[in-house]
Image (cartoon, rainbow, N blue to C red):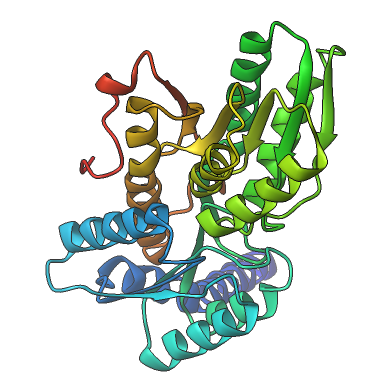
Length: 325
């Protein structure tokens, strides 16, 4: 009889334990169910500069991807102009607007972290695009190290492993740092190539590329090749060289922008560009963001999309940024 009493007590205790565990797990189960039903209504996008056609294409890609998921989704795109304070203000406005998803091209990968965490604390999914952003839920970007490798391997090949080369640097964001790193990795295998300079910031713009190149041309009597961190700087560098009647310089860059397509088809010094795909970056970022809204984490928090080298030989087959993916 006493054994039966003990068995009954054990059964009751086990029942209470199971009930308590279920009660503790219930709060976690409810948000998962709610997240699965959460629609994409508002997307906020803050980008480096809408004066750069790359970011214009990325913005169009983000809008197209969001509208495909929900035709009524509202997409707000803002230009930070590489100004960290502006970007903080953008994120604050997105939080006030109660967006569901933020795509951010960080002006400063580390310094932006407090704003990113503030947005996430407000229940907003944050996905970094093109460059990393500390604290973001995920990052989607081109394999920028590989892009730098492709462009500089092309230059090294055309130079036959010998000559004077300039790396025209840019804003100190992760994408630029990785491109320069990739370039230097390749050049390190060619001791016959002398890097004249690698520390001048062309600001990621045509005007910046022109100004920096003018200084280089005045400073160095012999320049055989130039690697610029993006296409606007390449176009500016080409313009500066032609204004000063300095021919015989090979220019390669990263982006695959419409301007570089035209330059590769014309009589310019530009010879190649490691192309990015802003449409694919934006589409992937929106898809990952919506998955995270629904509690579905990506297999990898950082997604690297492969670049392709566009040259004078294959530019006519190049799809370009304008074509939807």
